Amino acid sequence: MSKPRVLIAGVQSGVGKTTLTLGILAALKRKGLKVQPFKVGPDYIDPSLHYHACNRKSHNLDSWMSSEEVIKHIFFKEIADADIAVIEGVMGLFDGARNEKIKGSSADIAIKLNTPVILVINAKGMAASCIALIKGFMDYEPRLNLKGVILNHAGSDYHKKYLKTRIEEELGIVVLGCLRANEKIKMPERYLGLLPAEENNQLGVSIDQMAKFVEEEIDLSSLLKIASNLDQIDNQVSLKKYPYIPVRIAVARDEAFTFYYQDNLNFLEELGAKLIYFSPMRDKHVPLADGLYLGGGFPEQYLSSLANNHSMIESVVRAHKNSLPIYAECGGYIYLCKNILDKNKKKWNGAGIIPYDVEITGGRAALGYVTAEARFDSILGKKGNLLKGHEFHYSQITNLKEESSAYIQVNRENKNEGYIDGNLLGSYLHLHFRSNPESAINYLRSCNN
Image: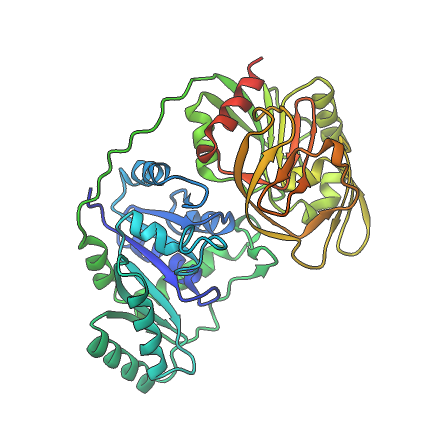
């Protein structure tokens, strides 16, 4: 398959690749193209922003959690009816899983999917050094197809002309744009990254401004040419056939619970689940279902609404007492705990079915990939099973009970983590279900009993 595709990468975090990606997605959509977005790595926020830029659900491509076959399956399935795929990178181009070379990086995904790369550079304060920097990225990994450059925060017209001319003449690589700083385009941030789409009331205006800026400053014709000039790639992926398990899963989804891998939801549906969405902030009870899935998000930003929705908390407690299978990740895990101490040291009641207290910390408590070993049989599988996932949170459990911990994190100094009680399992660990298919199957089977 030679479907047009391009990966937007940065030399490091903070160079503006998300803002540029949103502008490119929106600008290509305005040209009448069906643009399929993707995000490298385990990020939740950027994919939600992608959707608002091009009106197609974005999917994560993660080469640490997923096999090459899973990556290709997701990619080819989602681009089947699209005109072009735009993949946003993560961190710097070669930055991936700790101590695993380029595994998990944007470069790894670009190589596996034979995708040309556009490198975004913050050119502020650089002249010839910018050329040396680009050359280093071009030479570092021979398998990488680095085809274009976007210079962000370029200075004067002279600076822009000087850099573009020298880069193209000396390196033979296309400079697609030299962008000055644009104070009109600002994306609000919070501690886990950009402000989620669900909370940004000005997102539509910002994306429109980004699209106009891209149309004025970036050579989209050359970008499309780069995206289209590719070799064929084998799209024949053979994945194991999985059982069909028809169950109903209640999925928490509102401003407090937004962190779900889109492919997790798709995979559950492929396995037979009917997903019923509800709001723990506003609804009165959990919908009638065979299981409950509480994903991640920012419950700490909505503690008043969550704590004061007594009928919903009573409904969740009742579901647990009735042995409804409940799987909770990160934000959902926090919500189920007994007490939550916010960043101002005010205590709020959680659902209380996990006898832990949570403190929202002033700094990052965990970030990175995790391999976890199950300490007990659970709704996700057998004791001793290994699961691959990701953690990113600014909170911590203050009274962890080792005897009821769900996991041992085998690549985090054997740290105990999570909570298990009958048909309830909660932890900070975010799983990519298609990369841990047996865990998803076991969860649905527990809901089918």
